[in-house]
Image (cartoon, rainbow, N blue to C red):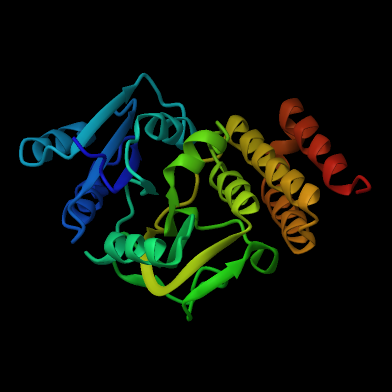
Length: 281
């Protein structure tokens, strides 16, 4: 049996409200030669029942069960280990592909230009699928073409892209954090490939409808994620991205100041990263 063209990896934890739309946006893609890898990160709601209903009709779906929740980073890494496609795409369980041509367009473009990473634009939607913003800075490409990562230096929206699986499987993984693991993955792979190919097309709909529930473990993981991105940026002399990490650090710090000063772990974690980002190059 030939390997599928694309493996779409979807971690899920208790997201029954939006999960059906997410899976269907993959199954209805014009590119049929795909596999859909659902990584169940310890769900206790009806999320897996939603998957089982679709498995009966579509054998392209396979499910990995984790005794989680461990977080999306761990779940995606398990999906990567299981992936057999020539490219890998990622989708969060409350998001979706905006139209049925996304994967076909990205694969055809990648093949045409021999691109290791290829992606398009992202827009945000609310809980009712109403569009919030289609003009997010650095997450919208108005022209098709090669972009050098030295010129781009942005860490967000990794799910807008597809990635050559041999690079991901052999060289790149997600930091195993509960939050802020996505930027570390994107910066690692784009600093490795040094460029990506952009298409002037919306390839991802990101659902923005609630604030992150914060606790000490999550806060420490966010600081760890910031440190990972900053250290990669520092190693590669991405000065603009280093400056952005300064901004992200202080935004997180002041927004959660009361929690940080009450928690010895969070306080020392924040100090550790503060020394890291302000130490000489």
